[in-house]
Length: 144
Image 1: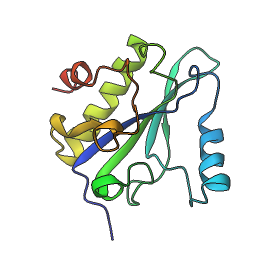
Image 2: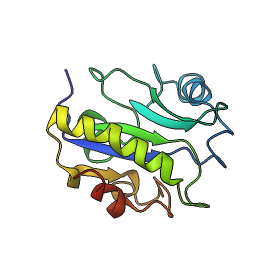
Image 3: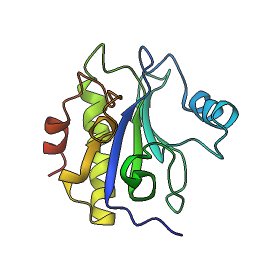
């Protein structure tokens, strides 16, 4: 069944910074260790060695995610991962701005309301995603 996107769920990778783990390493972990068919997220953002934040693609949007099982969010929430540990530091402004612009496009295409852009922690209280120092309210303000 094709997903009907109503939400976007924001995550972080819990790595020290965006240069410590690659998107492909996350994909490999999800496939080889978790036993999933692909990376759990649909999109992500990572600081690559060229010094630029890049939007990364994961699962195709015609497939449910494997990033937030609570409340059926894998079937209705697009998974977006910020590579880094935002329990320890706040995400860099450049990263936030670039991700917000991309997510705004997803909101427009799928008719998702900004209030439905939520952190994983909103559904799984044992998670801190997208990090204790990631201000979801401020991030949603960029999406309006």
